[in-house]
Length: 140
Image (cartoon, rainbow, N blue to C red; front, side, top):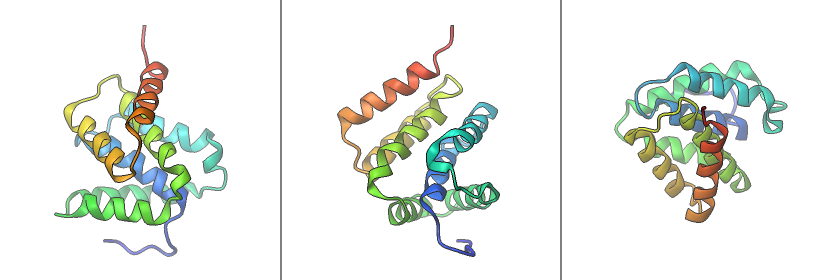
């Protein structure tokens, strides 16, 4: 696993979660990448985020996906560096990325299920978050 010049920030963890959601089906679509960039550019939680770190975080996530226990390591890093009060935010951002292309495949669904489990997201709260993402990314 790559070493960082400084520890992960909570924002790094949120970016990692979005990248993991996008990469979960082995196809990072343009709409998903645009969603990640839009989120980072506009949400208050990213106000002081160093955007130069996005490529390092993305590379780390993709490298972890190639390792045998990489997903466990990724969730360990996220739990270690993300305050619990932002767990639902992380799940909501992952849902928005997955919903952004209008197609939620089996692998993406499994990733969302894994995120819910790893971050201990209440099932009722998760359903509300998922419904909000679907509504925001609905097409005509």
